[in-house]
Amino acid sequence: MKYDIFIEIAKILNMELGITPVLYGSLGLSRVVGEKFLINDIDILIPDVFLKDKFSELINVMLRFGFSVFNHKEHQFVRDSVNIEFACTSVLADINLSLENLRVCNVNGITFRMLDVNNYLSAYKFCLTDGYRKTKKTDYKKIEIIEEYMKTL
Image 1 (tube, rainbow, N blue to C red):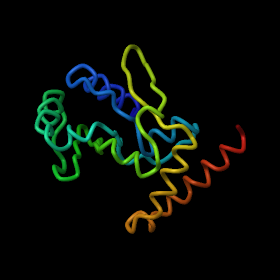
Image 2: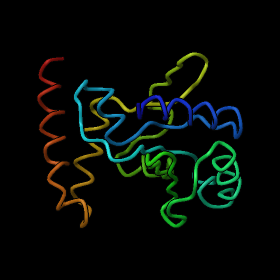
Image 3: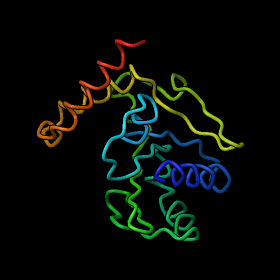
Image 4: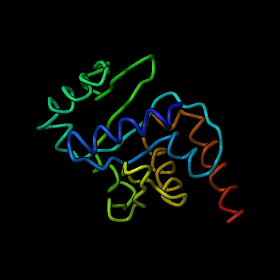
């Protein structure tokens, strides 16, 4: 269900704002490793300009498609109790990635980018350097799952 909502949002971003989003977080990881995780929200990376100078454009588009602003400062939206959180693509630099390094996916003409398993391992290991995330036991578990999955490749 959450993946379907991501695809819907990707289509909206493609058509309305010319954005090719990046599927990120637990939802993206679950698609890569085939593992079912508790997915609290849908994490999407988009160009920094849409969370800074053009945030009002993003808000207007999301409102037109039935989403409400949940937390303006954190760039969070909600619809039908599903939370969507946008972050800047510049966070990829923290794990030495750029958009060009990410796989482009096409689902029925809808384009988005995804991290691969190695990218997710780097991302979750980087998360453990964050003071807040260090306390999240789920990040350690995800790293274990990623490492086990990598043994099967």
